[in-house]
Length: 346
Image 1: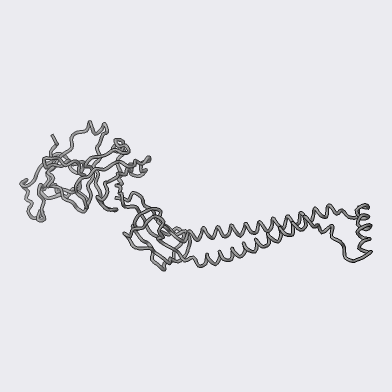
Image 2: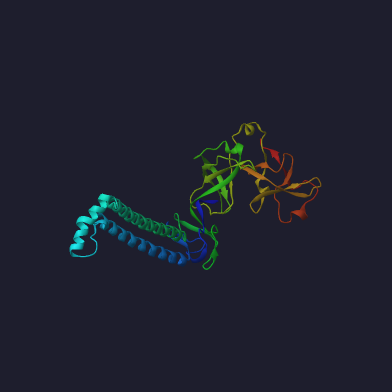
């Protein structure tokens, strides 16, 4: 059994854990803070970057004022020092003479001064944008110090405690939505071919904590088979409140392949002969010497007459113990008394 949605929240930055919201099973709404790392160093870096931003902003303002001044009151037209007749002589004769004989080009000088002022404006603007970008990068890291709930759910597993030091990529906790659960099953390809999304299998699933069969619905059929086991993963939706995440489930899937239609009938045995070791069904089969031999089987359908189909584990003609008890090993005799014979369903 797996949750309908599940995520593993991992550390994005190195640091020390300063806050963990709760323990396994605690419920949180979407957006709730789950884990937080210490961000003191990042806050100090942000303060320094903000100071650089303010300095660049002041330089930009000053450069803009200087550009405006150069635009409306060029330095090339500024009056030279001095008073009276010498100053008047310079303005009326010296400057025009310099322009006439080509000794100076005041238009070129003014263009150079305007270009220098424009350059200072662009440099100040670039410094301000660079500082703003540093602040944005630090803000992104500050967001990475906090792990929030991506949806409504509960903490499934917790891997850190307050005070732990973590590295990037280290898991912090598992968070999942357990309102709806699903069963993940690896099926042989021939069984998966008979399924399609939204198909409902009636009374096809049983669980450790809910032995009564329930309906399940095909939620997802994975498009690629497992390259090692050559099986196809299929997810089934189960009714709300039936079981818990992590519980063992058994799903009976009909075999609609042509091979199944032409195959011989399955052997059946009394249901009372089936025992469970953990979650695995087993039976005791009488060996050639009359002693008990433990066999693991795969169960099929349970029939109304108290018999159960066996998909694998025994063959027709094997003799199984119908009512195996705790004193089985002491009570077994070479005679076939107390044993039932697996027979073909007919």
